[in-house]
Length: 342
Image (cartoon, rainbow, N blue to C red; front, side):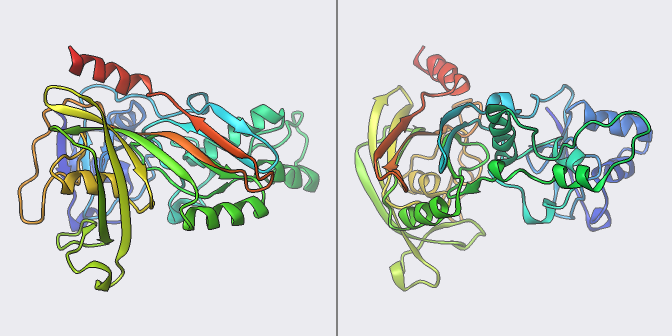
């Protein structure tokens, strides 16, 4: 079991390395940095490789005895489809879609420690196009000074610009769509807003789930700081209608593999809806219980949140041709489901 450390106010604003040095006084600075570099530190449930990352009083650090899995790399992000206007990729679990606003100005060296999906897609795109990846500049001979031309050439190539039009949670795998042009971006955003993009997810939930449509109004805080449905309906402040169509695909002894089709696409919609009908996702860490109830124990031994974006279908924003993409379950979920079956 990892050692869990809840940070106090005195740690707020320190770097991860400085906080660990204060918490582990018997460790030298080099030993603390080695803990981080050897993938043994998590901050708020996420692997931390950046010794200079700032922490806050509410953060939780976990120290593991053995190295955690390596971060996602560009080799883990296959390109499914690419044309002049859109790009579709297979997102692995364990990577955030975009970098948080406060991290956008980090040096490239620190970003590369734990890249986000959009950064990895740019690198794959550069590889596909045969051009220099973002953040690189031409090699110079020893003693040669960097010129203004080098600086301009180091700026991002316009061909590598991608524009996110939707997101997946960090621990959700599946198909992700990016726009490559402003025109495609605007049209796709409108299509998502009008619910014209078909999205189907495969999930594994606790218990025996029956076919049903879940229709509710979601708010940002249900009363305990978590998102959830409100009994006040659309009259609640900030409430957004959320509709999920659920179809069982396979009943296992204590679990059900389900297909969830989104009619709307609200933040954490599937996770919330399955939990509220009494069948939380296997591997779910937040939405396991109702307000005022204790968290439900997860007996599934799921490797992570058991949610996968398996299908994406829409009318191409420029060609107006229908397109449909499917992605099978990734190995981690596939192997785990095989163990459940046996």
